[in-house]
Image 1 (tube, one colour):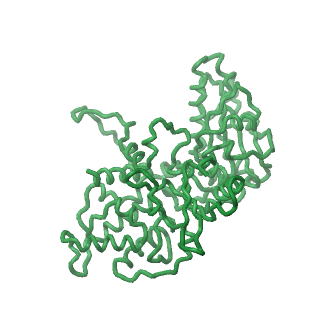
Image 2 (cartoon, rainbow, N blue to C red):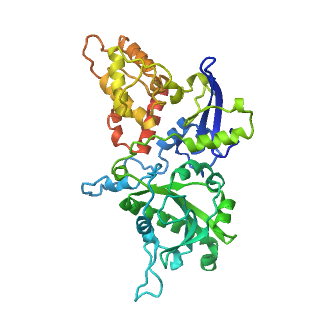
Image 3 (spheres, one colour):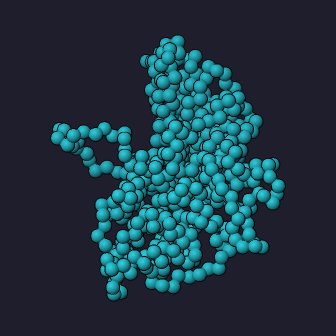
Length: 462
């Protein structure tokens, strides 16, 4: 299974008791944890999620100065977060087809116009020497844009026109590699290609650098304006260069620079940070894996259930901790519903329902199997800190993944002498600095959540 190009790592184990026992595949896609496909693999230690969080928390991109360095606070009017919210990476898209007029308006920031006083066409973005060597190609998915057949198109900026290059269907895994799952859900992809012959005669060995800058200008312009059309974009990483060059009919004078996946979004998604994701079954990846394994294994050895994870849980010695693998939600549904009964269980269930938008929660439900992720875990931990007079660590939360296990941990902490749990009134304890930030987790960015989680883990280890 790990031979599949869309899979980073996987483990298969038997779950349940005979005769209902099933083979379950726990799969970590290449794109898990928002790892860029272009991320260098020299430091394998940084591929571990916690190590990556710690690295991000260092914020090495900020220059450090001595405390006595003279600084000037710049005046700033009250600022709306809306421009920041609009510019985010959208990784889910509405299935409804996009109107051709809407798509035309979306591409229009890339078109050029003629000005009487200018000898050259005028664009809305910069280009070295006004050469504009970066070309835009559009990969349209079947039935996703009204009036456009599936295939690859060249966008002509002077005529504001799409020219069909190739209507043939290509395997998205060979074209987009680890971005396959994202691209399959999208309505279209944009590929920015540098025509080196259009710039190298003037800029020689700087030609590629200037092409990359131009592709960045174009991408930012589209990401800023796409929400005006209820469209969202997500940058793509590494491509299958040879396959993509073949699909676009390009030779060695052209270089693939960058790409964006896009599609329709709900207007409310651009009004909030990390809008609640729609239920995604991962069926496309599951189907691809089943077909892939069916060609290599006997039928009885092909897993019947697939669980997508951001990372495989590891034991102290670095091996996969099979006991920590979550029970798949499809199998959780087969367990009898057990209602929370104790005061602590009921309170925790209420927190889960609020954070995960659930109507009911069984005592044996697994937080991550019923829709939880890192951000939801931080939100739940924040509410637990606000509700109970305990110092529940982030490690304890991630280790106790079922409602029953979390209730047991909370009750054991309440029973400790340091707890103020005597009596019926529950008062939250004084929070440390990072724990205090948990109360603001709804307002934190993805990077802030990573940094906060890393800081809390570091404090727990110290």
